[in-house]
Length: 346
Image 1 (cartoon, rainbow, N blue to C red):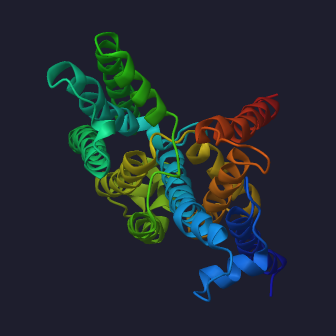
Image 2: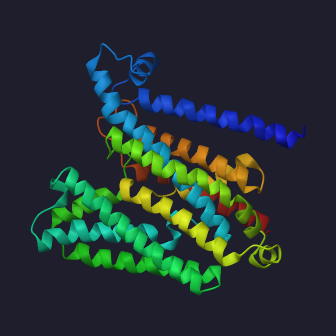
Image 3: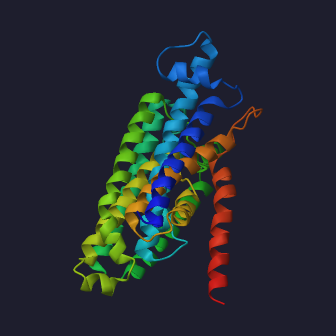
């Protein structure tokens, strides 16, 4: 057995152990601390004599933890796919403008409704949430369909990247105009949505969200061979028999779908998709995307759980916006990548 294989066989259980510990801490820690034994009893269905603990865990912390797991996995995998496709270490899930399209869809619902119909969707409870999710998915998938069409018609990967970035700028421009003409309450609701959150879903919706994010994340493993070839360059991959356009379409479709779903349910979550692929490469120390995708899933979920835990540290009465924490953790990783590249060039 080679040392490299031994190292990989040890790292995956270690990463899973860290993920399990972070999951337990997310369930146990907060403004009200719950003993681990109590968490186990409640989660396994044995119940607890403390009704407050049970309500906090089942109605708040369990859904948050499940959503963070699914979102972290999805964003980690989507970021890895984008960085490999564009061969750019600073690419992320939002690089194609899909998150901006999602934000545009939500902008039309939250910002236009007040002007046209005179009411706020945020006051409609579950129906308002459903309208926001539907609009977000509609905007994201509209941009994704446009990107896929452009990718099919244009051969160059760089051209697709530039057009995706331009679509993002156009979407942000329209949102800026909508904000200018909207009521203060609607703008406030839109800004709150844009800060991102893992706490917007009930337990049932959290399980649904986990299913539609974790399954596609694992299905990305079937793209590992194509990703390995594309990492060598389009010309070399084509000479080895890879159909570049087809592979590019599948990669964009997978990454775009994961990004659209996370943005629709949680808002635009920043930095996780950009930072996690670098952590996966650091841990894996291999260019084989079979290992990279597995580690991106585990480390993405662990990073999201860590951010969620820091957002509601013990003793804090309120919860911080999740994007303020993801930026605090993700930005140093991105800076270290730029610094490392600079040192390698000298």
